[in-house]
Image (cartoon, rainbow, N blue to C red; front, side, top):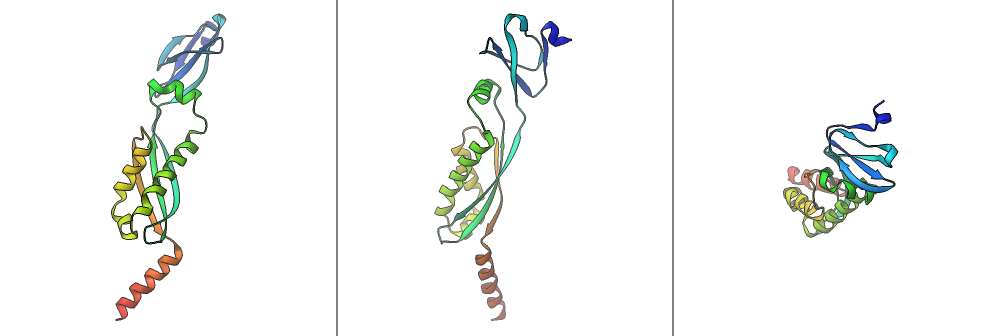
Length: 163
């Protein structure tokens, strides 16, 4: 019934994109709005303002030629004032963010030795955040050496205990 009269509701943590005759008109914030369809106005879509999480796995080599798997948890959200850009200019947002994160990790980890990678997670996280403009938070969740390296390290540690 509300759509028949041109009234629309925009839910909390969401903004709506209004177009008039196919051209962007304005961003509608949470609440009740009049969108007279008979005058060419319509809601084209919605943009969520909620924090979203993306886990990115990256295999890369350290300065001492050891392969490690790095898992980064990226928290991000769209900004209300940038909603038109998020709606019209970005497609496959998660894929684009993942590409930037992979680039940042692959650029920073090879500069560090294996031991330093474990100790300097915050430096890697900062490099990712600098690569992406408005990330809320980056957490390097897990760093795991390659299986062959793990076996070799375990053999070395076992040899030290025997001696």
